[in-house]
Length: 293
Ligand code: SF4
Image (cartoon, rainbow, N blue to C red; front, side, top):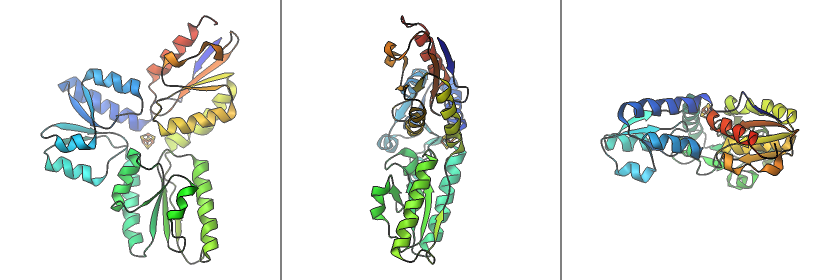
């Protein structure tokens, strides 16, 4: 059996930046709060917990005072910064530069579209941390669209500026745009009413999809390693599965099943932008120790 780890899988630069910032602080003080899971991977969160990182939620942030809190790569809405100032909390801001740029674009778009009575649409998952940060740029007024079912909330006779959560699939984003165009046409005024699409997908994720599809085709069995809460993990795994039906999703090595493999299998291990390399290496080691192998 041959086991290969995809060299392009693993942390994106946004996650690397946040983890390095946390590690630098923890090595100096041994204590740091982080607002929400620093990365959607329980194994990596556990590793950082052992170093002194404590994950808190927004309610706990409101109760803290005079301490340091890390903002993770997903970014935060303006209220979080207001709370920090009020409670004398020093923020270590590891918001990903790609997310910060998107927040800024949406803020500008919101100011502009307010003057023409239009709407901001964000293609994303309701309640997702990054989406909350984006929604905050519009005073909570943007319409979150997770699928075409949510399009009933949109007024197609009014102007629309469209954006996307950074980790959505390019195909799903294109399909949604198409559906909006159709509905605008049906509303009968598509030529005169603005519909501006801002492609705000992160290339660290969308760039991985085609490469990952090739990787999935090259191997007999694919083991995709990711936290269950990772949006890009779910999306990239589906891409693998489409190319190779022998693709399996695991969050840690103990979920591996012997029956997936045979001694002649060529096995590919890959993962999301939140999957640590050490975890993919553990999975590889465990597969090579299986009895059937
Ligand atoms: S996936 Fe892209 S936007 Fe999200 S943290 Fe990584 S680099 Fe930043």
